[in-house]
Length: 158
Image (cartoon, rainbow, N blue to C red; front, top):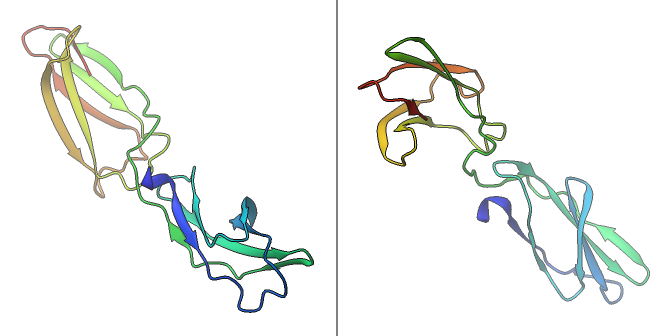
């Protein structure tokens, strides 16, 4: 997935002082990968979406290595939220349900909205659809609540 990778490319040293045997790729100051000396491009994978990274390339010959300066910070693309906790339902009247939920554990970007879908138990048919826009009054990191009505006495689930 493009949200979890970035391409790093570099120019070979203008004065290699020998044959470049390999390049070490550092991600946020930690060795991330080693590539053969003939390559000048690397795809860094398994990155977190919507996260800032910095890279360095170290060119090595048989006599030693020389480290580049840090790259400009890059930010990976956003992705859909992950690890979304199940909502909690509480019915204090025969015709309403209080729905509460917490923010996803991994936002993977700026959350623009939440969608609440209600279905008749045991079916895949969508019965009700409500869209909540995230703004200054509704922030995804807070526990959120919404009261909804049960229609027709059917037992409904999200």
